[in-house]
Length: 260
Image 1: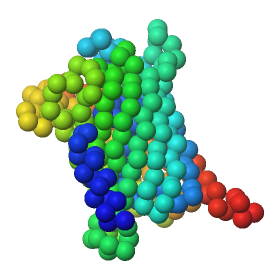
Image 2: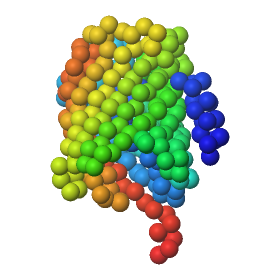
Image 3: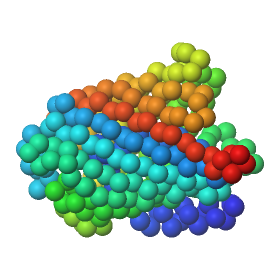
């Protein structure tokens, strides 16, 4: 297992995508349990965003983004996720945007690390009308920790364009952070930060960087259902000013179903 994790890190570092508004999520380090599948719907609506076409990409203003994500746990420490991206914006109507696939591996519990640790590599295609880069890859290390009722996760993601406007630039640094506190028995309230500061060898000017804060509610202690929702506020001119997101998921344990 240790060798497999090393090989995965090594491979991933050679192919360093941006979440944009299709998948607004800070990942936790734990992978999906072996033999279980979670079906998730990422929905968000941009109340106040970009109104002009930029680099051939259609505006995000009053856009409804909906993404279907299906993730299956193949081992105790390895999962694969599949994404289907869609967009509804007047006057373009409801449109297919693209698909991604995401393998992820986690450090096993027997290593007894002081933090949760995993690594995902996401690769896929988006239509040119909805992304300046049609083929890209994202490398996302995931580090998290829980102290009693307090939880924090850090995703220092790197993205590289394989085909598109940014294909000749260095990998882009896209950090995500989540901090939450369980004020209630089965729910937490927290803050999520999403950033994109530009190529790692030369960050963009601040006005051109993307920085957003989301204030979120998470449902806890439910084996079958997942819920994360809240409003997000852009902090720079290059960021959509107001987005509301909802992530709902349903997990199925195939072992339990067969046992019945």
